[in-house]
Image (cartoon, rainbow, N blue to C red; front, top):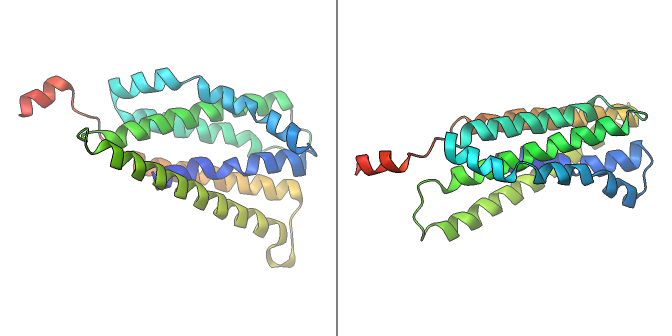
Length: 195
C-alpha cells in the first residue's frame, strides 16, 4: 500500500503546478482542468471490482498502473502549447488507471481476513497509502526543485516538469513490481475443498 500510494499519488501535486506554472492557468482554472481525471476515476469503479473478484487483483492492479503511467506520458512530453484535448484525454486515462489499481490493491489487502480483522486492516491500509502518497509528493517536489536549480545550472521550467513527470512514470512502473506478489483469492469451492 505504501508503494502504491507513492507511485500513484505522488504525481497529483505536479499536475496543478504544471497547469499553473507552465501553462499560466489560475488556481481555479488549474483545478477545473483536473476534472477529467475525476471523471476518469468514476468510470472503472464497478468494472474494476467485478474484474478483481473474477480474475484476482494482480492483473487489475497491473492494468491500472499501466493506464496511470500511460496517462502521465503526455505530460512528460508536453510543452507550453500542447493540446488541451490531449491532456484532458490523458487525465481521463490516468484517473481510470488510478481507480482500478486502488480498488484491486484494496481487495488484495483484505483477501483472507476474518470479519474481525477488517477494521484493523482498513486503518492500516489507509495509513500506508496516505504516508506513501505524502512521501511520493515530497520526493517528486525535491526532484522538481533539483531540476530547476540543481548544481547551479537550472533547466527551463518546461524541461524541469517533463523530467519530473518521467520520474513519476518511473515510480508508477516500479510500483507495479510489488503487484506481482498479489495472489488470487481462492474461489469459495476451492476454499471449501481445502477445509
